[in-house]
Amino acid sequence: MRTRHILALCFPCALFVIQPGAWAQDPNPTPTPAPKEKRVPIPRETVSRPMTEREKKKNEEKLRKELETPYKKWLEEDVVWIISDEERKSFKQLQTDEERQQFIENFWLRRDPTPDTEENEFKEEHYRRMAYADERFASGIPGWKTDRGRIYIVYGPPDEIDAHSSGGTYDRPIEEGGGTTSTFPFEKWRYRYLEGIGTDVNLEFVDTTMTGEYHLTMDPSEKDALTYVPGAGLTMYEQMGLACKADRFTRTDGTHLGTGSMPLPASMNQFTRLEQYTNLQKPPAMKFKDLEALVSSSIKYNILPLKLRTDFIPVTESSVLTAITVQFDRKDLQFKDKEGLSTANIELEGHLSSISRRPMGSFSQELTIPLPTEMIQKGAQGAEIYQHTLYLAPGKYRLQVIAKDTVGGNVAKEERALEVPRLDEDRLTSSSLILADILEKVDTKNIGNGPFIIGGSKVRPQMSATFSHDGNMGIYIQLYNFEPDETTKKPNGTIRYEVTKAGSNEDVIDYTEEVATLIGPKNPGSAAQMAIEKLLPLKSLEPGQYTLKLTVTDTKRNQTLAPTEPFTVN
Image (cartoon, rainbow, N blue to C red):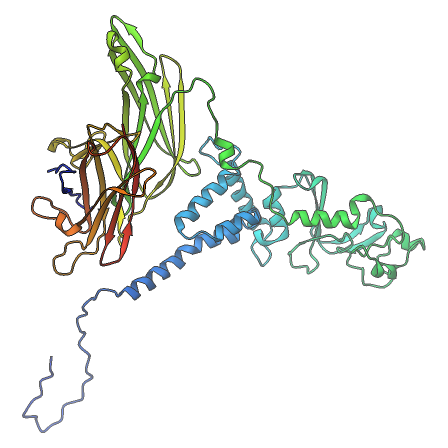
């Protein structure tokens, strides 16, 4: 973990307030020659050398391909029969494993019949069917690849099965022409209803190769093993002279039925069979709507207004300090008077989950706001602010905050996505840019502890970004991964501060300083990490709306960051 350093910087013109083996040979050999010995090479000590950038990239590419393997298997095996074309296309466009994992979580959630529980019954049943298909329908290829396996995985077990695993003698139903013949092994599956297919769905699988590999057929006569044997296995119509066996091979409906000119039932119409076969190739329709439609809800009465803000301070590559700040205006709260003391009470809860709503933690707090009854009108002009901090791995999350005014009964519900940034050691990076109404050093015992504490400073964000004309505006940001100078080891870059008034392209403040000058005995820091703290007096600014822009440049790498924040001066 890197050490966080705080630098106090100063702008000119008093705009800112400073914060503090060779082989030996015998020269006299004996007359008798010694037997010749086999020399064993002396192992040389290897000295490790650092990998070149090309070798690093090659290893990273190799690792990336290795990591793609499970996701490729997931796409081409696990969900090949149930994923939609749109989902498949979207998945192939993803660039990182993090995005793929989030897609997979979301994929299962959209099919979860009970998204509010940790169990996903659809996912569990899907993998049960996969295992059953592999065990029951394998025939030289995995069971999930077979037609029977696919139908079973997508639609589940049929309501009825008529199995003829050995083939043999078979009495045809009248709609197939009647009569007796001999068949290949086949199975008939019947479903009373399949969504998107219809009612009384009959499917037939035939093993014409006698190898155990049954395939789905549209031709009810394909199971007839005597079709190509002259005079054998005649249908009832052919025996009665109402049809000729040779006519089977001139039919135009895609079958070899021996029914002559007799009409077929509607269920065996060639277009009906083709439509059914086509629909069976499609992934099943999702029974449950998209994630947002499932879980979103709105409160349209008894609303308690709140302000919610999140800030991110990277600590390591795998850990980011995430500050969740909530503010309530006292004028929106109900106070209860008791013996000259008016009190408001808020029950606050926060729930953190993955993007697919897998629970990942929660916090709760009861806020009590006491005010002397005689000062209730003046005191109600202020605000109550609360902050909860936690450490998260880089990635996408969902945050839901629920608050209730227990006196007035009003409720607040706020939900938003959190995208926790990743600290890339090869690129110039920054934390959130925070405009604070309180920015000050804390006692040694409070470093790193309590709300609004970042390292050794108290940084309380101004939730509305509105500051008084006669006050100061705190500016806080952390910067990471400047390319150090080879000689001084200090960062080589600049920071430009610009304040622009809304509606004008002119800078009210424009100041640039060298990053290297910010590091010294009194201001410890490094190219790897530094914190910028400033207090900007606002007396020189007229009331109005402004934008603060920081342009941070790494000169050696030619990389630039430009975080901005709007603010208002009353």
